[in-house]
Image 1 (tube, one colour):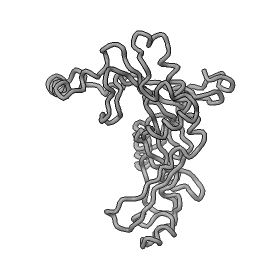
Image 2 (cartoon, helix red, strand yellow):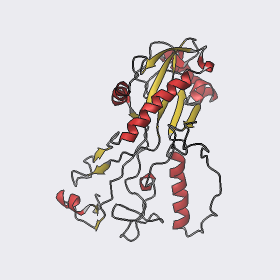
Image 3 (cartoon, rainbow, N blue to C red):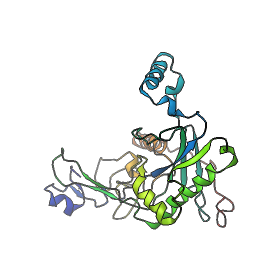
Length: 288
C-alpha cells in the first residue's frame, strides 16, 4: 500500500500516488483463535512447582549446560484435531495440552497445580482487514481482525468448551482431575459460554490472507504468486492464502516458499501428491 498498490480511493485519500488499483490488498484477514479450559490437578505433578524464580533459573542453567530437562521442551507435547459436530467432514477444532494452569504469556498462573487445554476452531469464517491511515512509513497501520463476527464461529467455540469438558471427564483423568478452574462449573448455557469467550479468547498468532491468491476483484496474486497487473512483483508468504489452513501456519508457509522458489527458478512442478487425508465416513450424521 505504501508503494501505491491497493485500493485507489483509500490510497489517494491519504496522499499516496496510486501505481496500481488492487482493492483486495489488505482485505481477507484471518486468524486462529483459542481459549483455555483449565482444571485443578489433585496430584503435585504439574509445572506449578517449577514456576518460581529459583526453579526457573535452575531449569535454564541445566538447559545451557546439558541441553536437557524442562527447558528442552515447550511442554505442548500432546495435541489433537477433532470435528466439532456432525456435517463436518474433517477436523475443525485443534487442541494443545499443557501440564499447568496459566495464561499463554505466563503472567497469570493458577494458585496451585493444574492442567489445561488450549482449544479453538481452525477455519473461522470471520474476515478482517488491514489499512493505512497515513503515508508515513513510521505510522502503524490499522488492523481489524473482526473476530467472532460470524455465528458459526460462536457455535464452534461453544463446542470447543463442551467437548473439552467431555474429554477431561474421561476415566483416565479421574486420578488427577480436581475442580474446573476455567470457565468454571457455573458456566453452562450458551450465553454464559459466550461471555467467557468474550472475556478470555486470544489469538493463536496465525494471521494470514491479506494478499489472497485467486481471480476476481479481491484477488491480489495469481497461481504463480505474481501480483495481478504489476510486472516483476510477487508475494510469497502466508498472506496469499485464500483461506486459513486447518492447523498451524508454519509448515504451510515454508511449503509456499519452497514452491514459489521452484517457480521463480523455472523448475518443473513436482508430481501431484496422492497422499491420503482424513475424512470421516459417517460425518453427515455423527460427530464421532
